[in-house]
Image (cartoon, rainbow, N blue to C red; front, side):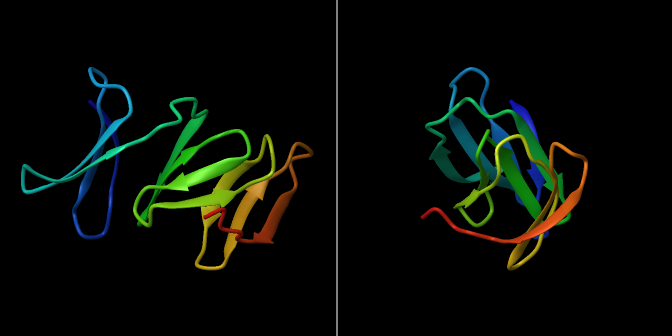
Length: 103
């Protein structure tokens, strides 16, 4: 398993290595949820505070909220707020833009 992060409610998010795409959420050593991540081509993982995201080229998948969020291609995410996403662009400038859900 690959540890992706732990949320504020002590749920542990694990991605199976043996069963690609299977995401497990555990609490107290018990599987609470199992989901399938269809796109396995993520380019990174963002885990900070109560945020766990799989980062793709032009979107991020929020694993806690199960929400797909649009991001500019090649952006380096710094943080995610309730309504804004903060990232560095290719010119190394810090940008805050309104969060757009792709759902």
